[in-house]
Image (cartoon, rainbow, N blue to C red; front, side, top):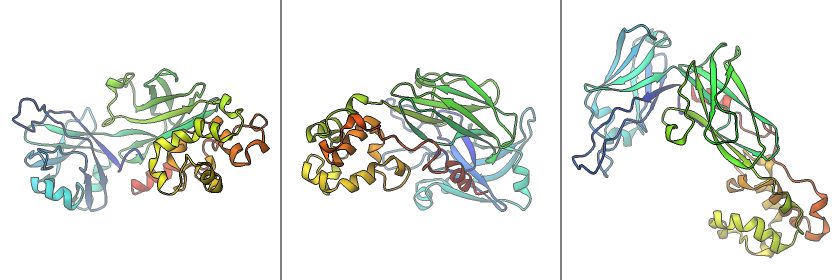
Length: 354
């Protein structure tokens, strides 16, 4: 999942001194998340306050203030609550993993629904809300080379699904997708972007709502603390592997040796370098690598990177080796996009509480 809560309070990047050692540079507050309920604001500061030392004591920023402001060009700022150091220090973090509950007066929740939240200290403003967030439906999208696919992006306005007319820009951090592509949300606050799977590659895609975004077209400009993103992983077809004779040497050299190296803990119950064990556990291996189980907990995660050609060779071997010629079998493709996948939009809404 991309975000752990309703509303995104993004870091302003204000430098914070954490040591008198000149070799140790300043830190910054990480982004935080807020949920506004009928009688409280819940702040998730789990990745926000930097550590002061190796003992994980939190930097003392003094008394912090949760504020709310009307959207620009308005300048009025309202104080919501004070947060003492004892509410975000190491002991508080260990007791409640950085979650801070703040009681609010009845009726304030409705008022805060149209205001931007922020977190300030005596020296600076550390967090500022990004009222619009564009969250793609799949954190990591795996496609086989040549597949057709799209991704849906849900725009939230202060944690609530937005409406129509919001521009969303998709930028890429590689060289496989068109960059700076713009779409406009429909009534449900969603947009859809077509994706290309013409060549094996891994591409980062960043989604920015609103007009005139600063495009993070290089890795150096891509900040995971502020940008929502997804990775598109296109696996090569490996058609030359699919047509290899389904012998043990070919299966081990072209398929199983990868997973033997990537998941050595498998040796605790199955030796992927042992032909007899692999054949004996053939039914289990099929289940653990079946694309239909891609998003199920029983799927063997490391095999997400198994190409269609590798899977075809493996299954031909498990089906009896030479009994079925790989050349006469279509590659075992992963499940179509949108099928057998978790409903990330539903999960995202559940995390946002409404």
